Image 1: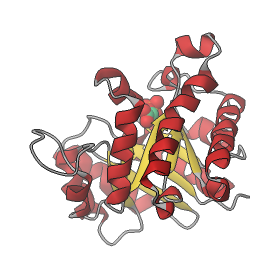
Image 2 (image 1 turned 45 degrees about the horizontal axis):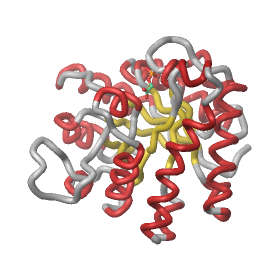
Image 3 (image 1 turned 90 degrees about the vertical axis):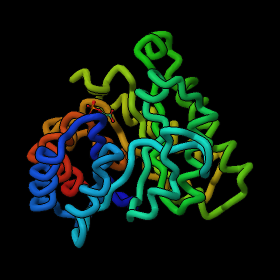
Image 4 (image 1 turned 120 degrees about the vertical axis):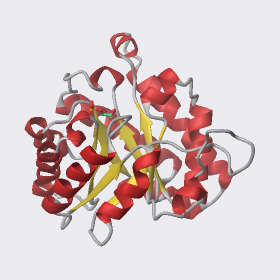
Length: 258
Ligand code: PGA
């Protein structure tokens, strides 16, 4: 039993069509139970309006997978956090490992994006995680610590105390994303406890409220054990969020341990 409300967020990544999304959103909405768990869909930008419409009047909320580090202006192709608020967006994933890896996003850039999200009144889901080479070299906590420290530093510099409680962190070991190879619940718990400890060192009062999601090959079959860990407050779900029964199965696991 944790004081923190569980959160399960689907990250569709660059998948979907109008027709497929309509069916997926209908099925997820029909089966969603948010009594003890927040349920979120993070869709690609062009489908956010469709997602908003499909979830209107439900207890589910939705978010984007990225946003600009800038507030507005001459940044062709970018989408600002403020634009997202026009449509009822609530969440924005920032610093996903695929963005760090394929778009060379630094921890400083990710922190700047998180601040834009917070400034717009939204909730950033800040992703951190090590590669397999880094884990093998026993650098997991060093890498995750440095990624998180960039957010801590940016929050301290911003000096907006009310932003701190809104941040959500997602621990996603890169070697577990889309590979079918999930971290063991003990591996996840170790890193989650470290993240909370680091947060406690920076913002003592908010550490117990910080929601820390696990991401990386979460499925209905392994979700319950992961979510039962004391510092695992839900999941960021990639592949399994594209199938209504799998996403709902994971959500049910979160409900059951909440
Ligand atoms: P996965 O992706 O569930 O497909 O491993 C998780 C993520 O990248 O957020």
